[in-house]
Image 1 (cartoon, rainbow over the protein chains, first blue to last red):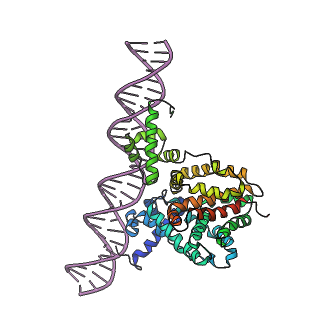
Image 2 (cartoon, protein in one colour; image 1 turned 90 degrees about the vertical axis):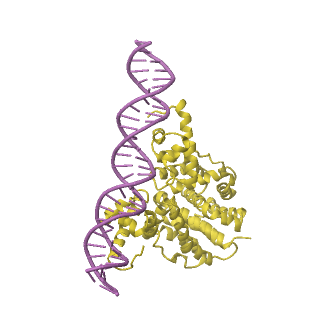
Length: 188
Length: 188
DNA sequence: AACGCCTTGTCAACGACGTTGACAGGTGTG
DNA sequence: CACACCTGTCAACGTCGTTGACAAGGCGTT
């Protein structure tokens, strides 16, 4: 039950977490077995469960646990749409994008889905709601979240093609304008 | 190998498909076992695999197989954004929306992901590409697909709340306008 | 009628999976 | 020393998707 923050077990625990993160991001949830994680970390499969409770909890903790604050929200509202797309497509954010895709794909499991929803709320939609002005800010923030989520979900499969045909800047222009339509205070 | 279109086996095959569809939509892919499908259909588990090859192929065939043509594309371009949202949120389309959600959640498996991508292409994005005018029609069609996909994915979790707070018409207005930003031919 | 073939279905089993319980070393505290 | 506890090991359980061998029944050909 108890898990000490320091001590001998903490190093093996982080070793398990590192192996798990690498395998989950590379192969996804279903294709990664607890036994494979244990083998990569050089420990017993039972120890993985002992430390993290279950495969699902391990996934949520290592893949869904490292959320940044969301600095992409800083800046003028007039260019928020562009910045959101730039941030979502930032090549340096490849790891986070793959982590998000892995979570969406594993959202067949209730715990993963709940974690995904909660993470989106706390690190994105709530901040966005506080930022927007005009009517229906909460609803518009949710819909902007749907837009960004749709882009991130589609990107692993269509992103390469889009980059080759129209280029990153054009995608940022186009999708940024679409998001901006929800950022700008609508009539009525 | 060979599967006759008619004959004694066709009825049990469709019985398996019916049970599988109901269970997959209700519980999702991972939580539905081949044995449960077989029990619901009153057949042997091995027979399920015999008829459909694998659990994944069965899922793709029964959940991803019944795609409509897409009449939502008919009509003037000026209101296409609205119509797409109306169609995506149509209460009568609850089954299709749940099927789509089930496929997204099961897209951890390669075959499911491929089927999802192909279905989106053939029944939506290709038709949309043919419809749009102006520059970058293919890219804009893909991005519109991302928008619609994001909305459909988010809807099961946030739709109820949005309906209660701002109402369906307002959502159609807002998100429809955002999609319309990609439908309308952009400046250069 | 007798034969062989294909389809349809049954049965037991395989290997892999996530998870659990009982148990062993190792360390610090009374 | 004895006690407790954290850390780790081991074998096993039940379930899973899938497979192979085999039986029952229809059907055309000789």
